[in-house]
Image 1 (cartoon, rainbow, N blue to C red):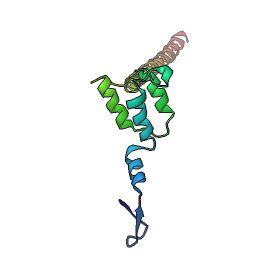
Image 2: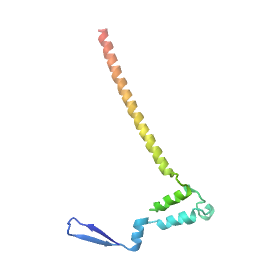
Image 3: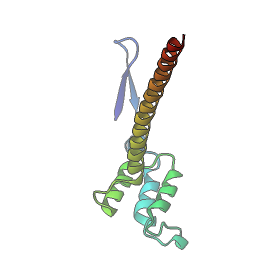
Image 4: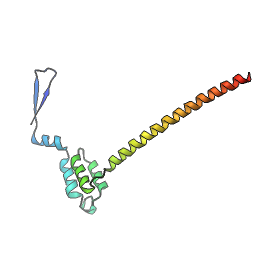
Amino acid sequence: MKKVSFSEKLTEIKYYEYTQEEIIEEKKGKNWNETVDLIFREYTKPYLEGGCNNNWFILEKRLQLLDEPNWLLIGQHWNRLYPGMKRYEELNQFVRVYISKNMDDESDSESESESDNDGASDGASDGASDNIT
């Protein structure tokens, strides 16, 4: 496979040769072999034998130690285990976005009510002082 890139001059073209390993690594990620081992060999192994004991959280901790796991395989494995369910990260992300959106809405309404109260108190004090004199 060749990768083509253009330099600043449109007439100059640079070609880069990739080895087969580099092509696979670019498509699947650096640690795709380790990802395959974790998912298909070690996931069902008992914990005492160095496996994950069918525990998704243990698998995730081991996947986090890899520089570049194959996320496609991880997602497919999750879908095989829990069809149609969102992963914990996706749910947490949704919850975080939902909470932060609501917190922003509440803080906006609080700041508006505070500014309304400040304006009302200023007007009330001005009116009261006008009546006294």
